[in-house]
Image 1 (cartoon, rainbow, N blue to C red):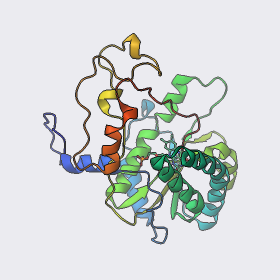
Image 2 (image 1 turned 45 degrees about the horizontal axis):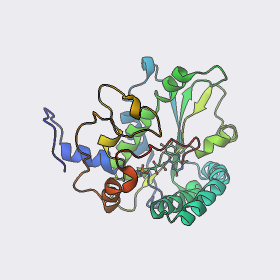
Image 3 (image 1 turned 90 degrees about the vertical axis):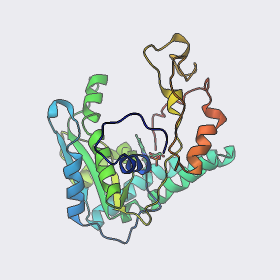
Length: 273
Ligand SMILES: Cc1cc2nc3c(=O)[nH]c(=O)nc-3n(C[C@H](O)[C@H](O)[C@H](O)COP(=O)(O)O)c2cc1C
């Protein structure tokens, strides 16, 4: 592990860090045959609902779908939405010789073909409504009131030998899924988390842009204020650090020319998977 900052922690930091750095979007390694007991889901949700949420309103409802017929219907919608998009992206990545991108596309497409076979699908919902008047603060209040809990849920699953993936593609046909599952008006679906035991446990840290490159201290200088400008603040502190146990992928990313200081930060695509 990298040099540690001074700590007064009573936690086993090595284990906590391992959990935080190896909780991946799991698709091909989901064990589609092994049943997931409801008690495990409930235990992980007990942990998840400790997460912060605006005014502590806890307006969430966790829809847990285990019925095979319903999973199949939701999986069909998911596939119809994401298969064409993913096939197209995979071709672009193939043409560009993007090996990491191709691996991601293959993984996404595997889940596209198998979502309905995953033993449990969790759809975290919020009592909320989105309309033309819904502004940035409303949206951040809404999604910020459930995504921390979703991530806690995923961490809790990982710590118990299960895997998951944060997915949103089905939201392009959210109304249809609401009809299938009887989700009433006044509830917003926020994502869909397929859950299963994993076929292996030895997941690795992922490739990510170095922290020093994406961190600004104190003042956002004009020469790096906008995408297209300098990515690293003149005042950025500290060297990029990756856990020593990092995978080849993670190491490769740290050394990649596309992440040098001065490179253009990528924009988040509007429709992401
Ligand atoms: C907002 C958002 C939407 C996503 N939607 C999908 C999706 O629809 N399908 C999917 O397979 N993965 C989806 N993902 C998972 C990402 O592909 C995944 O987090 C990314 O490839 C990085 O992989 P890692 O988390 O294992 O490092 C989504 C992630 C985020 C944050």
